[in-house]
Structures are given as C-alpha cells and as structure tokens.
Image 1: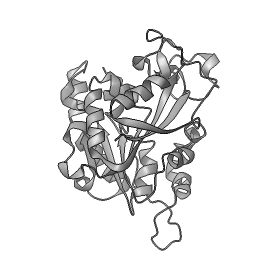
Image 2: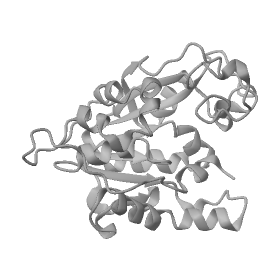
Image 3: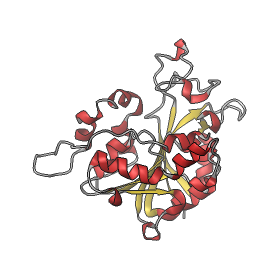
Image 4: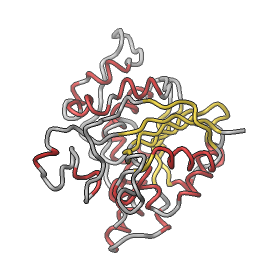
Length: 275
C-alpha cells in the first residue's frame, strides 16, 4: 500500500483543544502559547528535531493567514496550526485523490475514500465546532471559490508520498491554482545525499535529493525563495535499506546505532509561484 495513503488514513486526535489566551480577554494565542499548551505534551519531545517555531517563522506563517496542510497524518502540525489560526485565519487539510488507486487491499481503499469525512469529524471533536465547518478536501476536489485564496501550502515530510502516489502533476497544477498571487509553498522533506543514486535512495524510501526537489518545483511553475538548514541532521546518513522509517520516531528495525541520532536529515525550502 502506498505510504501516503497510510499517512492520511487517520488523524490521532484527543479531547477538544483549549489553548491559553494571550491576555485572558479572548485574543488569539501566540505561537509560543500554542507550543507550550499542555495538549501538546505528547508531541513536544519531537520539537527539538522538528523546530516548529523556527520552521513556521521561516515559512512566514502568520495567524491571519489561510494555510493548507498536505497529508496531516497523525496531526502533529495540525495541533499547532489549527489553534494558531483559529481566531483570525483558516486551516485547510489536503489529501490525495482517492480515485487514483494504488491500494493493496479493499480496506485500504475504503479508508482513503472515507478520509475527508473522518478528518472533519475528528477535527471538530478535537478543536470544537461542527464537522460541516471543517475545511478538508482531496486535491482534485477544491471548490472553485478557493482558487487564488491560500496564503501558504505546507508539505511537511510528505512530498515523497505525493510522488509515490503517482499524481504529482495533479498536485502541482492544483497547488498553483489555489495559491494566492503572493502565496508560498513551504516544504520540509527527508533529504538524500546529493550524490545518491536513484537505486540507493529514492522517494519510495522517503528520501529525495534537494536538487531534484528544487527542479521538480521549478518545472511545475514555482521558484525557490529561500532554503534553510533548520531541520538538518548531519548524523543521518540517509542510506538505510528500509528508508527513513529506520530513523526515529518509527525506528522500524531497532538498529542500535540509529537509536540516539535523532530524526532524519531534512531540507527546508520555500517557493512562490513563478511568473
């Protein structure tokens, strides 16, 4: 089964989020308050590797923006973005086109087909409100009225899944369509060594070469604004036989030499629409 389908199949959410207010009078919470909220106690151990404050600052995300997250997966960034944007902005979730296939079992296909409704319900239970008000779409189902309205599209540790899903052209076309003229795409992606061969390290293993990533975006109508080493990890050799999932937090093979190396080496890239 495509790993991307697995990633978007479930959003592990808990009880309704009630972030602390900045001044106790209904103001939206600051990013620092959201990151420190006790509801993130189970997530916070990953902050040292994922650097959410620095990453969102690099992507120039503001609380009054409309921000779309690609493949929310377990909801790690959703639990940051949703309360941060709740007062003055808008959070949108995007999943792959479930009609594209690529599922190993009927159950896997059923989970993908039900993703939108399940995400909306889980989101409403976590953050309050009605499921009908939650904005979550498959990439091919964006309403026309959203065209040109999204300030940021964030693809965090998910681009390899988009590639493996076989519908990368659809994604690039739709992202250009819904992105505002001054909008940008922020990407955090597991990084392969610059000299890695496709046979050794490729999207099926979770890693992509930075030069390839930049070229993919360029030929899809985007241009690089900036890149950062915020999420770099030089201790990750990125050449693991079973891919990025040998690194923590999955640590699939339990290789002792990888236990204390942190998470994967990651590129952090910011793009805008090219003229």
